[in-house]
Length: 285
Image (tube, rainbow, N blue to C red; front, top):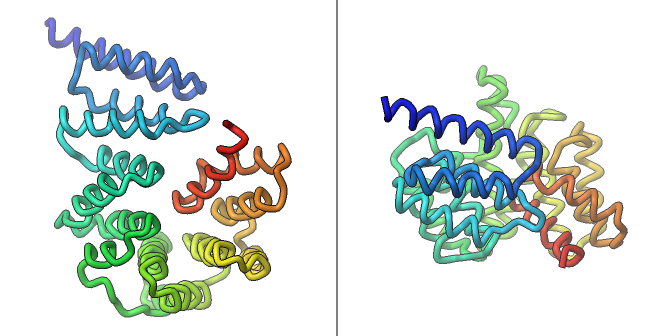
């Protein structure tokens, strides 16, 4: 009976924490989860909610979230949720020790259903300056780049095609960041060129091409790429909106530009969101 009461207690407390998260009381979430972990130190959901609140704060507290995520793995053991949080925190902090270690763990998992997660982790590692290591961690890295329209002709569902597209996008970014710039950009350009207008997942490819041009000092080419993306049906796609907010912040430091970046940062892929947070942080300090 005591065990049943304890289970009911922790379930009620977790529900309260979720409610606080929903209304934006992030400090309340953190304090309540700390109370839960004092009573139930192996409660994975409390670690997950607490660290989510930490990285959702303004500004995000990635250092505290990383510390708690490491504790989460130590106390409860690793699982996919814990590894994803460790990956994100390590990437945003540019903690190469933890980022390399967690990427190695993810990419060495024999589960074939985690292919996209493996390429995503390796893409973040490459973006942090470890491109060659990222390539080494992905077995069978080089694969045939079948035109995207052929996948549809073969009867693949839209979500399946989108997953293939994302894998190819992350593979291209790894190449680009591993000093294979021409290969990476060509792969991204081939991908967007062989995809239907508005195809699920392809907005990210356009956005990363624009980001690459921007970081090469080619602002006009970045603007042209975003214009192409808009003409192809991606005007409302979150990564395109995020890149537009990023470029606006680079042009001006108005309150409206900063607010647009803040709205976009949580919706974008982490590679773009990290750049947006850099733009926001000077105004937060």
